[in-house]
Image (cartoon, rainbow, N blue to C red; front, side, top):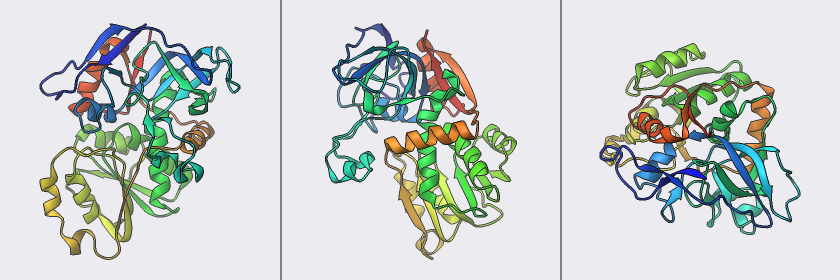
Length: 341
């Protein structure tokens, strides 16, 4: 099979083609696994963190990609949930132990042996991949393969982030950064909380225009002050500066949810944190750590109910490096998706 393979970590500014198109063996399913013939795979900012070593793979080489849609090609002898030709998706959560206090309480995202698709195991930048049946999801018929791919990470992690804000109908919601996840959060917020106003902070003028097109009531730069203090804010940026700036826009008792697996090394920004301005008055900061299977299942159901229509840009498998470089340089409108031939 063809796959785009990461063989060594690098800085994308120095090496703009970190992935190499290679021939690999088609995986053979273990007794509880399915093998997917991959149709599409979303491209995520977390893959930049993997390539550049902020959340490095456990071993190299590795096939990236954790927003995977395909049809079941082969099944292990103990598989009971799926059959050949079923259309399924795979998300960031590849596996967890199933026995620890976190797994037993439905928080397998915090499991100490949590494995991530496309980081700790080969993912979807390939024609085929394997996954345990308990970590695969049926894709609602409403979605095309291209539209379904970003739902599996950008959508699911956005759903978890929105849930963690504690947002109530009529609250004011801020979104710092406006890429694949944030544009889906805006649509979810407008559907679930019709009286909530959404304010968007983005450095890129095109992203601000896009946010207003989707229904944001205001859009400004990450350094701007919103016209009102906000009840909660979700940060999806890769750096620390916008986190500090977002805290200044929070109302008393507000909550900032940081939706990022790692932050790039600009800790100088944290030195600008002023306690009375940014944190006093019982403001909170809460991080998002991975996703649970419940998040994916509930979000796919919600997305189908609201007929969610993500904005996507399509790339061929061999164009994965190009798609990643556009993410790195901030050329973002919606989600980027690889179409696997």
